Image 1 (spheres, rainbow, N blue to C red):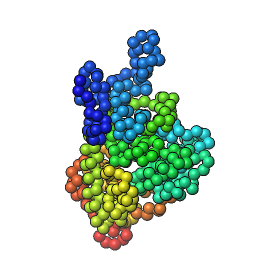
Image 2: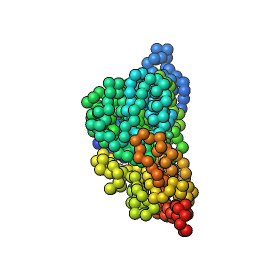
Image 3: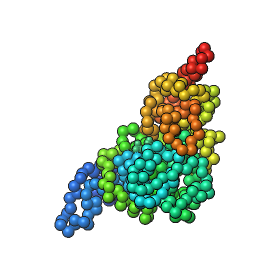
Image 4: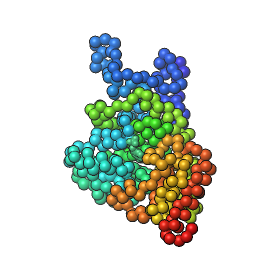
Length: 399
Ligand SMILES: Cc1ncc(COP(=O)(O)O)c(C=O)c1O
């Protein structure tokens, strides 16, 4: 009998392609097993309560293979699956917080995560305090109170891609007996390893790079030991489940994850370099770019960048539509992590932040997709030209 590749001696890219399946299954296929079902049939009366899973809601063979692959990717021993990235963030927070607890949450967190904490968690008697992404471990330690249970991080943060010194904060929190959770969607579990840096729970919107084709909503939370058991308890109690077909698509996405991320990252860096030389661009927020804000932490902790690049345009907010409407390869839409290039204006969302500086110029988040980079640059060239023209018209100076 031939073995599946070893989990220790092969590279991560190889293991993503050959996860540890059931090597002893009578018929094995190169593609993952797709097992659909709700009812699990038990062999005899005595096996009720013994056969696991005993009911399809807690996951069948496809889910099992996906959970194992996520544990391997994130370095955990429990991986829970949720029907969206937001559900994963909400589910993990609910699983570890109790009435009376306090959450410290970075100000640059994905907006709906903050909304969940400030509404639903508040209804359950859990308070949330924001802290600036620039806070050092010492500054954050000074904010800890008796009730602080959880520190929620995201690095690079949503929209403005601010970097946080995650290893320092995780070490401080561990010393003080406070749990840490990170939204690790940017890294897709591949570019940064939160659990290896001392974080307790790594959450991802698998909707983005893992599924990777803009057609599946899914999330996961990965942890070890007792924290993993709490996550498991929460998922079982609430009844979150995902379809076997979606679990299959996530496994399929994982096989090309490394290749896709390498291309997204290289293309985004090329676009970021090009943008940083343009007079219409005031600043480029892309921590993978040498010299950009947060690059030092990024270069220390991350093995590469993804496709996100945010730019601040040098002109009035009112000229934003001229830039966006000049794009056609770039779709105008929320989300990222799929094969395609996307653009959104961020200014409205940034207003919800507590510590954010005032953004008086257009802030645009680009997702650099898998199209030919030269085509994207040519399109951005035209859009910057349209933006400059609109800015000139708005200022009353003849074009
Ligand atoms: C950083 C981050 N986390 C979580 C989510 C939520 O993922 P989902 O859309 O699957 O709920 C998103 C979605 O844009 C995101 O950008």
